[in-house]
Length: 422
Image 1 (cartoon, one colour):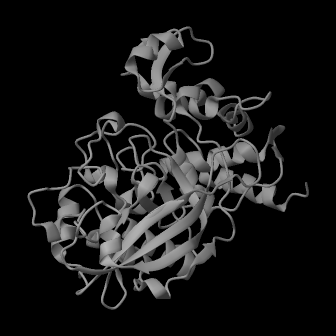
Image 2 (cartoon, helix red, strand yellow):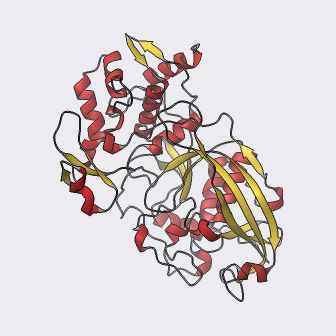
Image 3 (cartoon, one colour):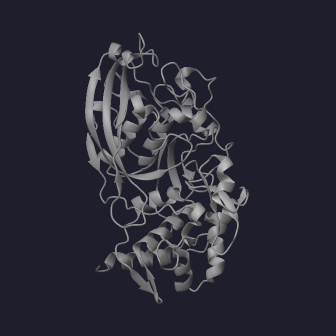
């Protein structure tokens, strides 16, 4: 359960150019291509790509203070419509239809779609065979771009114990037919591609046979995920990826993380985004559901507000063992909210797989009842979304990715799968 507190202030904090300029200076643009440099990428990224929040700026212009106006501006520009910020006007429950579909994240340590998920050839072998590609060359391209061979800079290993001293959850990942491999964290994968595909593409339903090769729904979903990994699609990205060490996150006297990238998403912004996108505009989005360094992109299914109440300034301060509310000098009113939001989890089985965590937040509001900020409360200080984003469109139908996957071929398989009777 997410626990939040909203703040009501005497004056609304309005969006200005300065915070947006600050975001651009940190490497975040209005539209971000989905590639290996994207902050949602499901593996390690260059730590120098995105600069940390500039703590020397005045408090009103820092991204972590009050309300993240640059995120709000970017989201509103992407939607193309005004966002509702009045707490009492926001929908209290919503569920996306159709429900985003589950799929594997095709872990790098398992050599991506070269992995044999059942007692049949791997998705890579099936695709190459059916569409007349050299099977070994195609598998090598998959490994080089998304699998074990993409991590050649990592420690060489022959067994898992060779990776133990790294203390990063690495497995000893060895390609089929080889005797040594690389130490690769098991969370690396293409969740950043599966999640938008699960929102934008219909779900494969039935097996399809093409040129003597039978494709299961799991195989077709694997190809869709790989297509989205290789398409460089434009995305609207909000928040900031925490790229530090989870074990070295320090806290202030109120229990909040000192690192603003760990502390975001701002819960006030998250509530506005969630209720507008799902509740008002009937569109889903992707969230990194963990605040820490690992990235777990999940497509969002829905949410429900479990409790929403206005509390006094004294009650808000007491939540932080303080005499006065310590984070916003203009705050005059507060709302405490408990929210349950659900997302789809990874699976190599067909059918919905849903997680329903609850979060508690405190939101800050202006005199008109608009959300202008907020803080995570209780366990939600550590267990909350890290960033929120979505892809603005599907790939072009004539796309062929760098590994040789044709979107048209995959869409043909998908359409046959949807029409099937199974």
